[in-house]
Length: 207
Image (cartoon, rainbow, N blue to C red; front, side):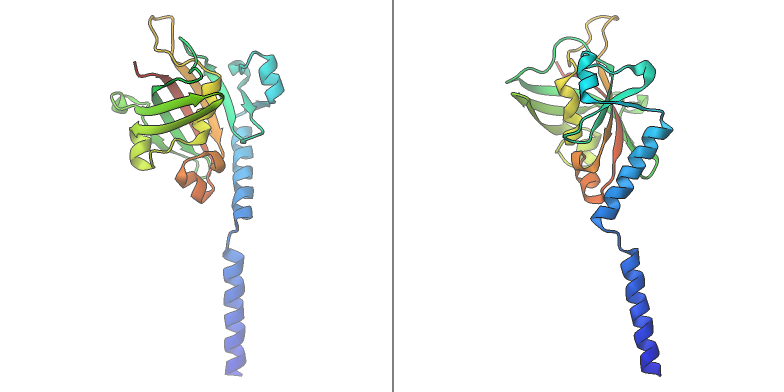
């Protein structure tokens, strides 16, 4: 009787453990639900890539529009197109980035360097463009310190659509975008934990 009871307890423990185990599929479903909730709670209007192109590759900020890129799952709003020129084919150089990073699953700000406390410490990215492909690495800053030198792939999406010059007058402003980045396009922590992040980024050339 004791032996039977022991077996039953063991089986129950194993079943409980199995029920508590979260598969990659479970995590992806949780991510999809979290992104959908974030979009709903933020009153975001999602437009297609075709709509985005028809609008001159802009998003209507007054309607809180974000374009969804089907290839990578990134959502982007262009708040400001920026000034100067876009990063050109064959060009290499450093970009200055200020950002805030919001963990969508945890519902909290995780990192930022866009407040007065970090005014002298923007993140510096080395960027290279070949055709339509961008590669980049962090040289310094908060992201470099907390994560790795690898720039999230989602951060490179805006570079095909915004200008990255430095403002030369009061009428000019640096590029500003908002991004919802799924784990597949995020940094190593996002990827390994299947966590989506929301970013607000400003971008301009270092010199």
